[in-house]
Image (tube, rainbow, N blue to C red; front, top):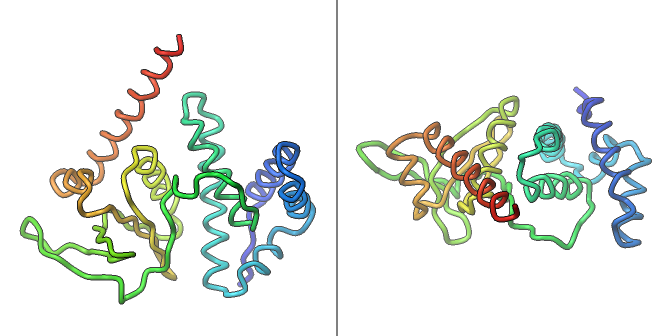
Length: 214
């Protein structure tokens, strides 16, 4: 089965490339113009020759593009979040920018060697060990459900909650640092109350910024 970008994603990415080419350095602009004219499907398959990796990147672009469109249509959306989504889309296309690479959580392969289990509050929990740090799983999604997971990850990142995303051949998972207060909230209340609390906090922060600017 041949993998390819949807017409919507293809159009949105090409429009983004065209809109931002003038504000970049000559080298970056050249990369953008190349990406703007070539077949994006072929470009991705060339950048990621392994089918497993290429499939993940295609799905990443689909979900990131939807999130970017939603953020662009929402006037009250976090501008930094929009910039980061655009940066991640360009990054997948092989275009690098001199901006903060740590705003959105990293996406890494999920391997058996990095997984462990621990006992907490009467239940066995899934853990992840990465770069000397331990994380707890808070959400898993299939490839088709990836958009919701990306929204949670973006929300976590805006609130500076340390987290990572792992990927396998059939699902994605988001993990939060075990020492983070957010993980303690998740253990007590679950993911839905945590998402509501973060949304409220984000809205209050934007309100304060608007009030100070007035």
